[in-house]
Image (tube, rainbow, N blue to C red; front, side, top):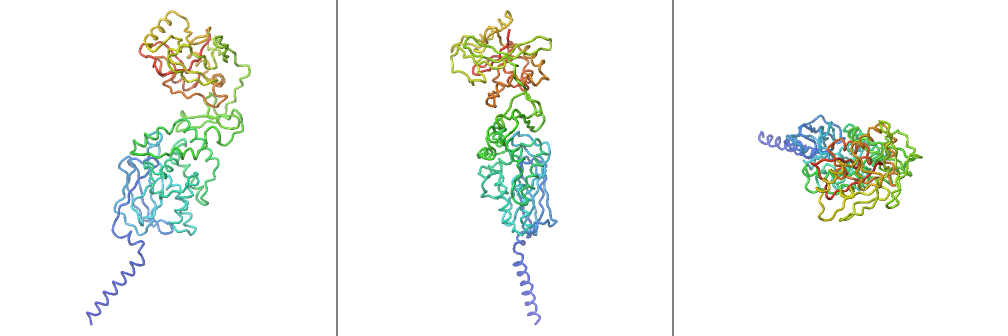
Length: 511
C-alpha cells in the first residue's frame, strides 16, 4: 500500500510539473538557465565605455525590475550581455555613450542615449539604432491601448519609415545596421545622417525626442517647421558634397559594401534650389549653424525660393542697395563691359577694382580652354594669367623667372588684364581687406554680381585658386571671409611653382 501511495505521489508531482510547463511555455524557455544577448549599438558606432543596459518587461511592456548591464570595450559599437535570466520574453535595451560621427569621423562631444524594444522569444541578436529609438514610444503607446506587441511593433516600424517618405522595411529595426548593405540599412543610414544636420549632439538628442513624441499617439510626424529645416540642411549638405566623406568613414568603421543611401537623402529632401518651402522676403538671408559657430552656410531668398548664398551679409543684415555704386570698364579688346567698384583705403586713397571677374578669351592656349561661366567669370591657366606665350614645350620655371624680373623692374604686371589695369599684389589685397573688414556692404558689392542671376557661384577647390604667396594662411583666411574677392592673390616665391593643370579666376585692379 505504501508503495502504491508513493507511485501515486510521484505521478501527482510529475503531473503538476507538466501542467506548469504547459501553462508557462512562453516564459519557461527564457528562464531556464542563462543566455547571451549581443548586437551592435549605433548612432554612428558607439565607442568604448558605452553602457548597454537590458531591462526585463512584461506583456504590457511594463518593467519587471530585472536588469543587466555591460560596457562596450571597443569602438565598433558591439556589445555582449552574458548570463541573462529573464522570466518574460520582452526587453528594453538602452545604449548610453559617445559615438563616431558618420560625417566627420570624429567622436561626438557629448553622450547620447538610444532605445530598442525587442521580443527575445526567438532571437539573441539585437541592434540598437536611430530607428529602434524612434519607434520605441509608439510601440508602447499601441500596446497600452490594447494591441499585441508583435502587431504594435510592425505598425510602429511602418509608420516611422513612412514619416520620412520611405516604404516599409522587410526586416525588423533591431536587425538593421548602418554598416550593412541592404536597402533598409540604407534607409537607416540616411535617417541617421539627417539627424546630424543638428548644430550639436544636444540638439540631436532633442530632435530625436521631438520626433519620437510627435509619432507616439498617431504615428504621424507633422512638425512642419522641423521637417522643412531638416530638408533644407540635407539639401545644402548634399549640394556642398558633405556626404562624400561618409563613404570613407564607413569603410574605416568596417563597412565593406555600402548601399546607395544618398538616393534616400534626395528622396526626403527636395532639390536645394527649387522646392524648399517658398520664401516671401526677397534678398532675405538665412544663416545655418553646424557643429560650431565657425562652420555655417547661408541661403538667400531669390524670386520666391531659397538659393545657396556666398555673400557677405548675415542673418538680420539689411540688403545692400547697388544703385549708383558701380562704375564701368570697357575692355577695348573685345568690347566686354565690366562693373567696377571704388573703395576708400584706410590711408584715404581710392582704389578701383573690377567687381566682375574677367571673361576675356585668351589668345595663347595650347590645351583645351579652362572653365568659363558667362556672367560669372572665366578661369585661366597660369601662363594665360600672365599673358605668356606657351606651347607644349612651355616651362613654368621660365615663366616664374620672367615674373620675378618683371616684379623687380615694373611697378605693375598687366598680365591678361585690360590696358590701364593690372594683376593685384598681395599688399593690395591686404589693403582692400583692411578697408572693408567691418563693412559688409562693400564686401557684398564685390560678390553680388556672381550670385544675383543664378543664386550660385562657381565651385572652386581652394587648391585651384590663383595665388603664389608665401603668406599662405593669410590668403586662405581672405578666401574664407570674402568668397569671390580673394581668388588670385599672388607674390613671388621661388619655393612654389605653378601647376600645369590648375586654372584660376582673375580680378584686376586699376593702375
